[in-house]
Length: 310
Image 1: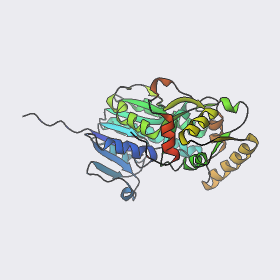
Image 2 (image 1 turned 60 degrees about the horizontal axis):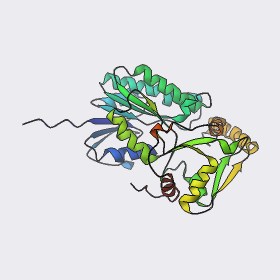
Image 3 (image 1 turned 90 degrees about the horizontal axis):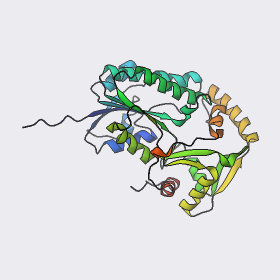
Image 4 (image 1 turned 180 degrees about the vertical axis):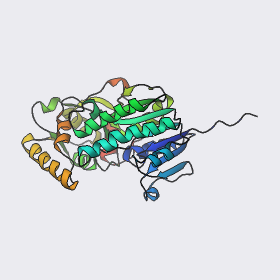
């Protein structure tokens, strides 16, 4: 009588975040066991299942990272700071902690490491955030050892339930699309990935090893301009969506003041670094990893705060 195959153990960081929750939901039906790092006293707010072992601790804490990685076959690292007070804070979490976690995983005998980075890392000089994400990729590469793995540089992630982008899509629902103005604004290119597409890639292709050794950028739409995005939103909701060009003469003073309040009080999001990211002319990605998801359908679900039909 043959022994039953051991269930793989997958260790997660960032499982309580917007993307992380979707990844967790995608993993639960699979034949795996899950260990997930969670801040102390937050376990009661998370999905509960006998397949999940919540590890209370902090990223950057050697004891927490050792406990998380012990016995794991795969690590999926999704935790990070999108906004922070200082450059030091960004690098502590998005770079130093990545290297420490990678080292802990290598010591524990983890076989594969999946790292969710950001497309912003493609241009590290734009902002402290972008620089810290590129530094995190470098820390990962230096500490990988014999582990296999993949770096996923995610473009702008969208989907129902994201608190960060909800005000933006609420305006679109009313018929207005705010876009940064300035020279040649209509030709700026962005790329988008729906959260369900991203979660599916992380929990299938990335875990299978199909993309080992690569840095990939998954997308629902690999390249789109602001006017094209407005047209897709119009078609999605059956309502005129007007692009509101926000002048740079307004954006720069606001970003300058926000940079001060962010550093001193921790308040605000549109800092000068974030503004430089928004104004970059080309955030398009290679179409190799563009999914077949219908963009209008995905936008309709996001704008109306519904789950994407699958």
